[in-house]
Length: 426
Image (cartoon, rainbow, N blue to C red; front, top):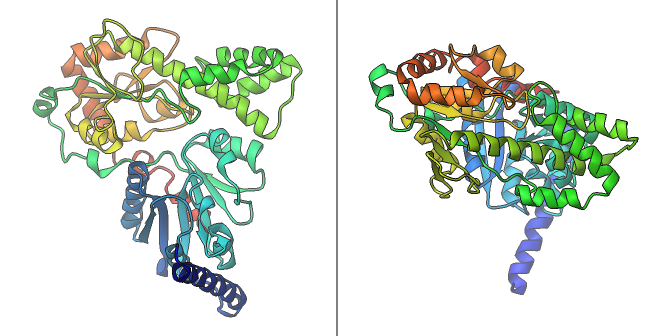
């Protein structure tokens, strides 16, 4: 870099520092910040397909309730002077994805400090389990950040094991996207759909593949391994409560006690193993049916009747969401038992019969055989669901039509999105 470019960069950084410091000094003299009706909400995220879809969903919700919303995209977390425009006096709050904003800077100040100096609430929307994401944060504190989750169980975990004093809330999910929406659902159109059932599930977790997880488990000392294997076995078929309860109980029985990053590391091993093995079990059953499987790692199934794709373009989020409009059913599995996944929301949006795990949240929203199909992991219920959508299309249509009628129910379309504004006010 030339000396002139270096000087310009340093000058910009100094200007940002001076502006933020001036704001901190003058803020008490300005009076109260504008109310929600006169302000706007800011969404900041990387130029990643998933982040863009999440921002679209939140933006659609804000437009629906009449709140202005702006979006700032950046290539990757880092030093972005343009982020200062997100901290104006009428900014209601800033929403970031996972730990992205924690690694952003304005001048020589990290973004969270800059936002705190200007009195702007920053909300981190953690979309995965906090055991995997919390260790990625470096600057977030209970004073400069608020935290949003897509699961009450995940929020409770964060409160108990990560940051007990944090201000937090949960949405029901990340919402349905406009790409999956159809105007009406007719019997004729449904019966001509080419794909009987779409199963878009990945076999990689944040911690890697099942081979990676087993390697991590093998590195744990033998006594702790016994507790982790016990927790995995007990959590495998549990569709009711938070899965970390099985780890806590197994540790208590073994006389072990874990804290902080060690507890997160061990729960990640338990959770990754359970989630990957559940999805592998789904693929093993689904391979016997003429369905479409989309995944990131080819499942170890032989003599498959199902069509299996690992093509990056085919399995992308936007392509998958669009494809749902040509499917009779969509199957989803969740990392938390109280999560209502956007795969299911988008399936309803597209007029698909929803095939979901038999969890409390799904039992509250659906009735098995009426407006959705519910399955478990310890019996033949999944095969029965797939048999219905593959071999009984008229019956599948009736279920899809009943589910389609729920797609604009507030609990389904934007469930819990009101907590975003509530959290900004807190």
